[in-house]
Each structure stands twice: as C-alpha cells, then as structure tokens.
Image 1 (spheres, rainbow, N blue to C red):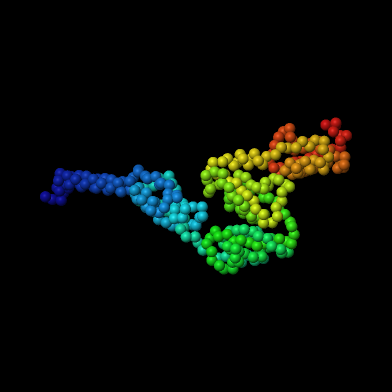
Image 2: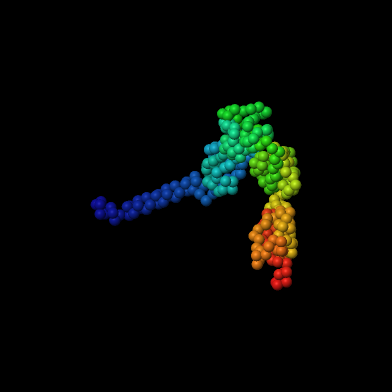
Length: 339
C-alpha cells in the first residue's frame, strides 16, 4: 500500500478517532483528579481557635484536614498561658483543605526585661520609661524633698532595686517621690468609662495610688470603671499626694457605658438673665461649665452690666455636657426694654 493510499484508508481515520477519544478521556480524568485533589468548589470554614490549648487545636484542625503553625507568641496577663491569642485566617473564613492556619500563642513564661534607672526623673517621665521597658508603676510613696514628684528611690517588694536588674515583664515598680516640702493636694481625676489599665495610668499621673477594686459583674477582664471614690466632681475634695482612689468596675460587654456617661456628664444649663457678670460667672463654674465669650454692649461697665442673652439658652437646651462653654452678652439694666 502506497503512502497516498494509506492516508485515504479507513484504518488511519479509525486510529485518529481512537487517539482523539483517548486524549479526551485522559484530559477528563486528569481534571477530575485535580477537582478531587483540590476539592474544587468545596471549602472548609475555619473554626474559632482563640483560647484553645495547642493539643486541642491539633485535634480540631486535624479532623477538618487543616494544618497549623505557630509563628508568634506574646505575653498577656489577661489571657491563659499556652492558649491561642490570635489566628490567621480569622474564624469563619472559607479555605481549601490542607490550608495552614497561622497562630499567635500566649507565652507560658513571661519575657524578662531590664529595670531602667528612674532616679531624678519626674513621675510622668518615670511612668513612660517603665511602660517602654514593659514594666508598670506600683505604689507611689512620698518623702520630704524639695523636688516635687521627682523620683528619689525605686523599689521592688519593699526593697531598693538597682537599674539593670532583670524582671518579668509587667512587674510593678514602686516609686518614692519628693513631696516638694509642702502639704499640697491634688484634684481627683475623672476615670469613669476607662479600662482598668487606663484608669490606673490616670490615677498614677495624678500622684495618687489605686485603692480597692470591686467587680460588680462576673466579668473581671473586659471591664470599665463604673464608679470611683472619691467622686471627681466633688470640687471640695482634694487628696494629699499618694492617697488612694477606690474603683468599681462593670462589664463592658453587658453595661451601656455610652448612655451612662452621657447621663452623668450632663448638667442643667443655668438661667443667667439679669445677673451681673461676677454672679453669672460663679453660677457657671458651680454648674461645672465654663465661661465662654463675654460681650459688653455699648461699652457698659461691669458694675452696670447685666446678662440679657446667653448661649446655650436654657429655653433651647435644658442640659449640656460638663465643661461646655456658656457665651454671655451684657447690656446696661436700663437698656433691657429696648429689645
């Protein structure tokens, strides 16, 4: 059979047809195998691993054909040591089988840090430096010294601690500070609505100490300040340096702090019409408000001036937030009838 006859023969067409069918079958089987291997169109929902121990994570992810690796660790006093602090991808994410989940674990042992030299620093500088070193302020004590709020001594467990000493991160360092050789007192800071850490920071910055801590709900981790003693709004109360402030906490998950703060920070707008400047200013300050702009029409003197207009006006806004400015307009008493 010549080559020309072979090309025209049925045998060649049959062989080409069979080869084509075979290639199609091979391609179909290959794609099918890839679909099965990669679970095409099928995903797995990443479970929430936060708070689980590593052995529990291994079991849970193994059952779902997922892998994991620990790529970081942190030390956090508020979390259980040896548990998952964070994960990537996040819980609820849809992933393919055999996907690796990257975990951040809570370290079982705290990091060791160096105690800095705080001598002669101001209280604010000492607080900032301790925070930068992973430490925190403990109890504040005051001793006679002309340098007010300057660090005289740094202590740990009732004994002096030298700079360069290694301590666990988060360890409190007590400070002995100068009292300025006076009996000066400080106002109580307003800390309601702050977290425990924020509240303690504000108390320390005010040269005061954290006193009793009372938790009013079952939650003792995600809490904010609900009440403080003494009250920051009692302008008759000032504390000596090193005094304590007691705190009551409520759960930030269960209690509506936004509405609560709006309520306790609101004060009634005083009615100031007809009052002389000195009396109007005193009423504003007693209402925990601030004096804003004061406009004296026709250059009227303070002795003859009386309030004839105020903003905010009581008849427009009954209550405002504390520290709101009240703007006042004055005119001579005999000019009131001109309006």
